[in-house]
Image 1 (spheres, each protein chain N blue to C red):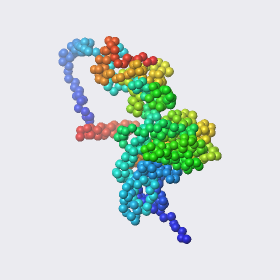
Image 2 (tube, rainbow over the protein chains, first blue to last red):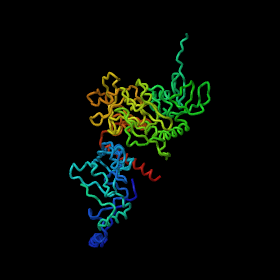
Image 3 (cartoon, helix red, strand yellow):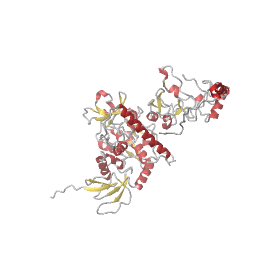
Image 4 (cartoon, rainbow over the protein chains, first blue to last red):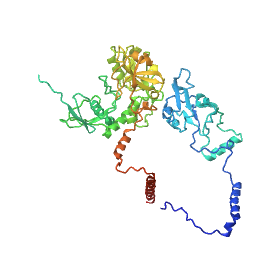
Length: 197
Length: 371
């Protein structure tokens, strides 16, 4: 029974003199190898050069602040209930008098932890957030862990730094490349990648 | 004197006939249908202000409006306007339309909009979120967007006694707490001041309630207007784990639900029935002071509806059960295994048969592709 028409008929046809000599075939094969030697390389020099991550890449989380520098998160727990990996946990606290410049709502997250080993970077927390507080960066990965203590990220790592706020600069492949070149040349960009442990 | 037999009234609710006693309200008749057949739970009109254990409650919020297509068997004319089902009594031969009538659903959408006019929509902050009747009501019957652009009324949050906090901004003026205070407590301490848009719930002249059962106004509140101060911002409802428990209390029945975070009891509430109503009120000692597991005799986890967010991230075996739809579908598609086939143990025959089956399957897929 024939399933596809790609199968080849096998024959016991005698080889010609040219085929029997083998050397021309070797030369042709070597030619192909040498051609690739001079063609454009598909590998890139990671980590010096980084590949474009795509327009919808979701990297590490940040907890955004608003324009006045107040934390947006109100510890409503919707991110945690939306999280399929159950990676997020939080403890809420009430805002005291005089803390209005720190927290946007009358309730805030005193503790906000993301277990980065559990997190699958699906972005459902970002989608569930009614206050636009949780945001997954488009440019940075969660760095490789070398210690257990680095796995659970608290507010110290998550809350946005007002002096170096993340605004997305590169939306397309071309923009991402241009940004990489800018950074490589030491030119100032909106966001400087910060060192995370 | 001739003894009168209790004559039953037959009414039709959304096409379902039910016999109820005279004096029953339309709402109670609908609930009777749903209690007899759980799959009919969706036909019961929603209630925001009506609370069965509190006599005289109801008729305020208009959430339960239904259309009476036929007033009674004697007078078959329809009622001219939609009627609140929680306070309208049934007549013999009455025909009521709720979910089957487009106009009722449209009116209900409008009611949601009206109830939400002055509601702050601060659900991310509110402790009631997750067990809030207004949330359920708006989710099931309202529209996703608001058309209201004017300023909402605002109030300062206020302490009513040492345990209860009043957020007047969230109040929908259902009067449940007022009836609770009137009927559970002896003195009249709690009421609604002012009129219309300016009405607000208040303890008279800021007098704090010191009655033993005052905590129940937290449970009867359908929204987050009256909240437990000892539970304030402790945890979201759906992260805590409810357990039924009881204790020997000389003041109340002692039947409560404990809400756990880990091993810690963070809240004690009265038990609610299917309709979200508390039938056995509990005292303040049970509610606010007995917050250790050792104070209680545990009865096991509270049954939470699968549709409730409280069931999220809890993996009890009856909660991971397949939904009705899947079971029904499976039941219709179920075929008995053909046991008449010979039982083959010879490996060579099995091999040949599987090759044959493979070929059959391939043929089928090829045929599907080609046609």
